[in-house]
Image 1 (tube, rainbow, N blue to C red):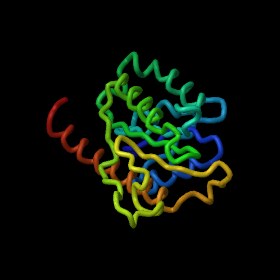
Image 2: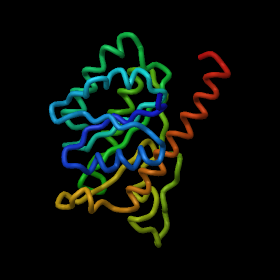
Image 3: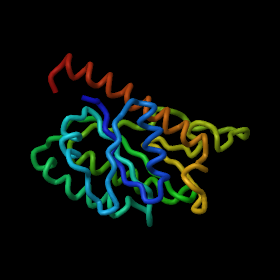
Length: 191
């Protein structure tokens, strides 16, 4: 069983590219929400078996995509039984503008995780706050509660900012490290 599942929706391929970088950094398994807002067969079972769940969605109109929202609403069944209680959670988002109300999307994911009784892992890395900083620096957009990336609306997924993908990779490492620590503590003490 893989410890981390990255469940995400991607409208144009940018969020998928970020999800792939997160998975590459932390060794997670990708679980795509389709264009109709559904998980593939066996998806709910993958989430039930995971130790950590990373949520991903583009930011559309200041929040998650409707497909991600449909998935979140459908998670009421595991919510009812608290099946995700004490799992580690984290989140990421991409939008066309530098801000684009990405924090609203991350707050939505955080709230979803708290409804499920999960434990949230943030970025765990500082932003480059100096004059020499560039878009290729790690965490250039300054996300602390979750991963934020940006792609101009007329750029393909292959034209994403290298620093954002490097940040996504580092975020994947962060989640894997937190999950490993959490699992070690969980095995040591009873929650």
